[in-house]
Image 1 (cartoon, protein in one colour):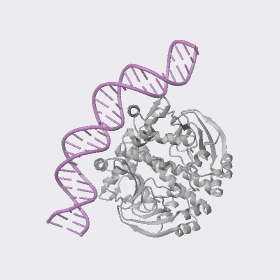
Image 2 (spheres, protein in one colour):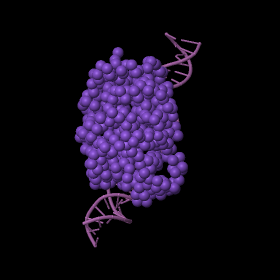
Image 3 (cartoon, protein in one colour):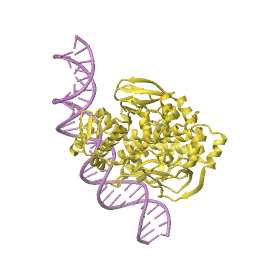
Image 4 (cartoon, chains in turn green, cyan, blue, yellow):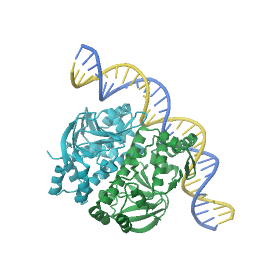
Length: 239
Length: 239
DNA sequence: CGGCTGATTGACAGGGCTCAAGATAAGTGG
DNA sequence: CCACTTATCTTGAGCCCTGTCAATCAGCCG
């Protein structure tokens, strides 16, 4: 089994053997975490960053009125809090949505990497830049798109992200996320997510039964969602 | 006049004399750009990144139906497209909102900096991480907060960001942004921005006449907006 | 003094929310 | 392995926040 981080970084640029070796070395012990657990608490100051090896987790902000907003969903190969290396203090929490497999990387090692392996450091930087690009895309959706288009766009994005780390292929993927979690992600109510999902099903671009999604008309879905994968920066280039 | 980039980076960590010197060296010629101009075009592949020295600009995504979404407003000291150093292809455009003064930094020089000045590179990285944190905050607002709270939060944020680069003080700042631009930023209609602004005025936390804002009750505004500046990462720490 | 752009106001419609109740699916303990 | 409990998904009804359309008002500039 290949480290999904390597799969992800290879989407950005080719890695040298030395770099791949180093990526293996700086990984701490592999750990399993149950679903619905806090991986990282809001307000904490982590001394290591957490890499997802398997499962789904969410970045959550909870406002005073108790509403939870999910600002990102993370999958295998994603660092859930790489930014805590430089941001220091978490301004939001990370919760597992499903059972997860994780490994930690000490900030000391990240510091060393930034000093001695600038190319790798740039790829790490890029991965946080891509996170930001995803946020921007989502902001644009929330601001200007009706719920159904935003939802369709989200599906396109998740499929490609899962495919990049070999967790999806052949137009099929598994999305073990409840409608309530989708609601918090899309900024909708759970009820409206349910209704919008039914509308999407009626468009016949995909089937969605339980957690299993099969996209039967990728072109159609993509066009409907106005999805342009540029912002994901997939496609190796010298960086 | 101090380079506002230096002012901004000093909020994150102290800079060595050599670093400040370098920051001056890599800056290209200072240029003025009129209002309502494209600084960077969507789809372009810049070979340099643009630093704002004065003025206001916006990151824009325009969807097929013609609606413009502004995903960020940039001020003096902000790189509008530092990410293009590693992301390569712009997935959105940058437009000036007011007349701006800018300077460019060649990507070659950024590459050199990442190889030879890792500490400075980390601060640049951090500045993009802060951009992402701002996006996340905004996502949370759009998803879970009513328009008026989102608006109030935006005012708190802009005041602190302007103050960080000495463009605001004494609870006063200038925000030369039209209500339509605010609408695209907050994900509202221009009409609703106008009505929400009147509601905010009625709360008596601030006065807002033309472009001039004076916050008369910072505590009250902050509490109402549920504003916690943690996500801006101001306050020097070793990074 | 016209012609802009931007701010303001009114009337009306609609997308999405809330509340509430059932129907299914998924765990859990015995 | 079954009965029970809980979580998740559906569906309906009514309302409210926010959008759209349209018109008026206020500055600003040539």
